[in-house]
Structures are given as C-alpha cells and as structure tokens.
Image 1: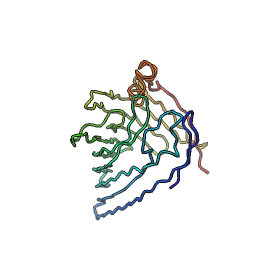
Image 2 (image 1 turned 45 degrees about the vertical axis):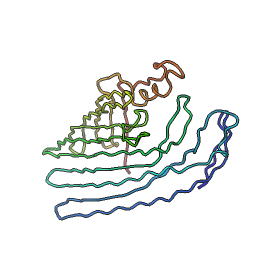
Image 3 (image 1 turned 90 degrees about the horizontal axis):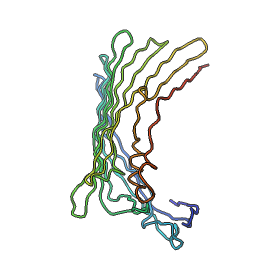
Image 4 (image 1 turned 60 degrees about the horizontal axis):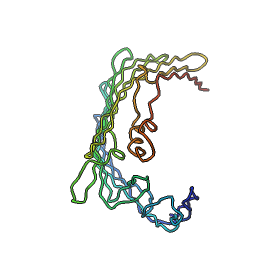
Amino acid sequence: MNVDVDDFKNVPGGQQPYDATLVNASASTTTVTATRTGCATARASSARPGQVLRQEPDISVSANPLSAIKTDQVELGWRYQGGGWSTQAAVYYAWSDKAVENAEDLSVEVVDEKKRDYGLEGAVTRYFDNGFEAGSTLNLVRSEQKDADGDWKKRDARYASLSSATAFVGWSDFERSVRLQANHAFDLEDDNDREIDGYTTLDLLLSQQTGFGKFSLGVENLTDKQYSTVWGQRATMFYSPYYGPEYLYDYQGRGRTYSLTWSHQY
C-alpha cells in the first residue's frame, strides 16, 4: 500500500509504502433450540511511522518508513433466542507486538512492546406480556502492555479500553413506545496512578406512529448530570501541564439535550 500525506505545519509530507497481509476466518453452528455458537479470528492493520515525528524541518514523512501494526483477535461467542429471551455473549482476546505512544511533546512513535486486550461482552433482553421489555449490555475489557522486564502491566490510561454497560426498560404497542436507558462507563486506573472516573447517564426516548409518519422525542442526559467525558479526562493527561492547566482540556459532557425527529415511510 502507498500512503500519501500532505504537508502539515512544519512537517513535510510525502509518500511511503508498507506491506501487510490480513487473514479473517469464522465458523458457527446452529442447533434446533435456537442456540448458535461461533468462533472467529481476525487480523487488522494500521500504518504508523517507524520513528518519532516532530514539528522540525529536518523530519519528513518521506524520510520515515511506515510500519504496519498488525492486531490479531480471536473470539468465541454464543447466542440464544426463544421463550421470551434474546441473549448473546462472547469472550475475546486481541494482541499485537507493537504499540503506539506519545511523548510529553505529543510526538508519536512505535514501540516494540507487546499489548493485548481481552474481555467479555454480552447482551440480554427479556420480553414480557403486554409489550414490556427489559435488558442490558455489558463489555468488560482489560488492556495490558509488556514492560521492559517482560511483565504484563495495565496499559496507560490514555490508551486503554474502557469497560461499559447499559440497562433499559421499555414498552411498545407498535404504534407508540417508550424506553428509559442507563449508560455507565466504569472507572479505570493504570499502574502509574492515572485515573479515569466513570459516570452514569440516563436517556429517554418516546415515539408515536401517526397517519402522517412517526414522531420521536429524545431526551439525552435526562437528569442533567455534569461530568467529564472520557476524552476530556484523557486530554488532560495528554496536554497538561505541557500545554496549559487541566481545565483547558477537561471537556464536559452535554447537559440535558432534547431532540425531535419525524420519519415517514412510503
């Protein structure tokens, strides 16, 4: 592959080729009890400069060869639907022999250190009589990286994946519906005491089908909760104090937000 990069500020652009071979495979089985079991393997690739890129006149894209960072993943999943239940779950493991890091001045480099993400994700919905339903989703993930001694350590909170969960209750009679959903981001702490504080928000969605189309009213962050977004907390780690105090980069989540939509099928 050839990658063309335009000039950016003081860093000249250029063209660099890189090679990567990717293989994907999956298999699944289905039984008469509406249960499905599957296994999948995948490989993804991204291109990064093999050396540090800084805003200096003697550094250019054309002078820095690109290296393909391959990430392999295996996943084993299970799915069941029947008897008023819809459930699915999967365990996964993803690994790579390279990692991308940023220095204090935000220069980027590829380091030859192994990293991995592994976890469990699942979803369940229970359907009740008279149009009621309730359910939840869960993604528990742990990110690790090998240190110079070959030991697995928690990955830097600036790059680590975050666990999350949702829970909802709803009702529908095919003409109107209501759904209340809670969204939760879990706390995260790495081995260098960097922390990301989790938070929980509530969303409400109402809809009404009419002869003139479907009207939907959404209320995000129903309780008007004030919180720092995940990126806002990571941004303070990246930019402060090198580029200024933390409050300049501590991006807050949106407060209570209303949306009204209309759709019509014809």
